[in-house]
Structure formats: structure tokens, C-alpha cells
Image (cartoon, rainbow, N blue to C red):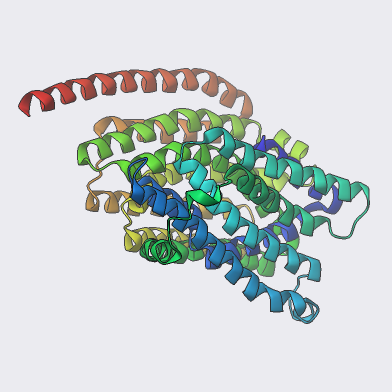
Length: 463
């Protein structure tokens, strides 16, 4: 639902404003992401790892929940204090930067909403309240898109500002509604205790913030470099491809992370940690590989239906990006282990490798004046990201099994062939390959289940 309405919102803006409107929408959205990164201290990830690391029903877990809620409230108030003078002086700011007053207000609203709402989504995630979590994250984009459509019909001058601000604001309201807490539930936990607990968690939050700044800063600079060297229309083509890739990938990654990150945070046994990582990698690949190949086959009609016929270059960019998503998944499987183990320095290093490599590739694209190479820059960055992740994996005790290496290698070859083949061949490859991938995954999961049972029996006997 969120996937469809997010795509529809981009379609509405593309029809109304064309590639330049998509470029502006992407730049404002990225600016809000950067602001959330700087001021939010990774509150969503921080909340999930902090709460999930304590046993359910324990006093420490209750303190962690209250600390996350109160900490997010303080961060949101700080966000308001920082943005208030900027909003008041928005007229002056808009004279020096290519941003309108209503767009500055939209960035402020989106940032504050993402921080406060993110903390409540983290509480819902850690508590296993998946339906409430899904409702908030799906209805926010849906209602925001409907509001954007209403403003287009009304010929409002604030369409892009509302498109940026309304989804996170509505999601925040729904998350607050779902995570209502009676006063008695927190009255026995002092602000001093919760502040001390949150301050300890913020050590990881500082590294998460720095890593997210590197990532979102690289994304913002990529758009700035592309706009400066190739124009706003090239930025719109780049943004269109990025949005489609990020939307489907974000949907899948969010679905995986709902269970994966809390499970990693609870796991203390090294053997179980390795099983969890390898199983998650197998499971994610079995779903993502067919999704990538289908997206590759439908990229041109998809661009035409989601945007307009002017986005042919974006379809070529998307094809080059899709291979990079496989390497992103590989690196992501390890990155979440670093977060669950509160290994902030290595997590920051991993994101820095991606950001630096990506900007180098984007710069080459700008020098050559070829927007299609932004897709190659994306894939190159995630090859470097995955390579560094594999190096760091051994440092935290994670080792991919031989089956995982086979799965990753086979998936990379399969996707590469599909991306280079004509559309008709892609459909045939998809039909055959999807069945093969799923059968291999089912066989591997079944075997892993038998191995787990056997290992548990041997462990019990030895004890």
C-alpha cells in the first residue's frame, strides 16, 4: 500500500511539473532526510536495538521504552528550537538559496515528524505489534498522496511542500495514536533514570547519526553535482530511477528489518547469530532476485506509467542500479549485525566507504556528461560496500556459509544475464530462474532446520 501510494505521489508531481518538478521534489525530500539524520540521532534504529536487547517483561525493558519515548520528545523540541528562527527568516533564506518559504516549512515539519514518529514506530516494532506498525507506515503515505492530489485539483502553489511534509506528519500522528501509554505506566520511572538510560544508548546514536550523515549527505551531494554539471532535467531522470529502486527496495528492507534487527539484538549465542545472518540472506535473496528481474523487464513501461514518456533515460539508469541492489543486500545483512552489537565505529566506516565511492562515480558521470552513468556509480558503490562488509563480518564473528556464497554468486550471475538480455529473454529467464531460486532456498532452509535440530540435540547431550 505504501509502495503504491508513494509511486502515485511521484506520478502526480511528474505529470504536473515534469522532470524538473521531480528533481526539485527529490532535492527537498533529501534535504529533509539530511535534517532528520542530523537531529534524530538514528532514533528508530536506536529504539529497536535498545528495547529489544532487554528481556520482555523486565524492568530494564520498561525503562528502555520510556527512555526512547522521552528522548525522542526532547530531540523533537530541540528540532523545533533550531527550525523556528529558520522558518521565521524563511523569506531571507529563500533569497540566497533555491528553496521557497513553504518548502522550508515542509522540511521542518517532515524532520520533526520523522523524529517523534520514528521513536513510536521503534516501540511498536520492538513490541512485535506488526499490524499497528504496518497501519501507521502504510496509511501515512496513502493519506499524504490523497492530500497532494487534492491540492493539484485545487491548483495550489504548495503542492511539492505538502507532498514532502504530509506523509511523515500523518505517519507520526498514527504512530502516536497506536502507542498511547497510560500515565500510571510510566509514573514510577523518573526522568533522571530514563535520561541516564537514553544517554548510554546515545553513544551508538552518535555513530548512527554520523553514518547517516555520510549516506544522506552523499545522496544530497550527488544530486547537487548532477544538477550543477548536467542540469535539473538530468537530476529529475536520476531522481526518478532512484525513487523506483528505493521504493521497492525500501519496502523489502523494511519488511525484513521488522523481524531481523530485533532478533539480532536479542541473540547472544555466536552460533545462533551466524545461523540468523545466513538464513536471512537466503530468505531475502529468494524474494529480491525475482523482484529485481521483474523490475528490469518492466522498467520502461513502469517509467511511462509512473511518470511520463519523457523518462526514458531514467529506465536506463534503473537497469544499471538493479545489480547494485544485490550487493547492497549482502552488505546490509552484516551492517545490521554491527548495529545490534552497538559497533558504531565499524558501522560508520562501512557507510563512509559507500559514500566516498558513490560520489567518485557521480563525479565521473558529471565530467563525462552522461546521466546514465549515475546507475553505474550506484552499483560500484555497493560493490565496495559489500566488500568492506565481508571484511568487517569476520571482526564481529559472522561468517557466511558455503551455501550462502553459492546463493550470492548464483544470484549475481542470474541477475546480470537478465539485465543484459532483451525483454522477451528476461521473461523466460524470470520464469525458469524464479522457480530454481525458490526451490534452492526451500531445500537450504529445510536442511538448515535439520542441522539446527541435530546441533541442539548434540549440545543438549554434551551438557
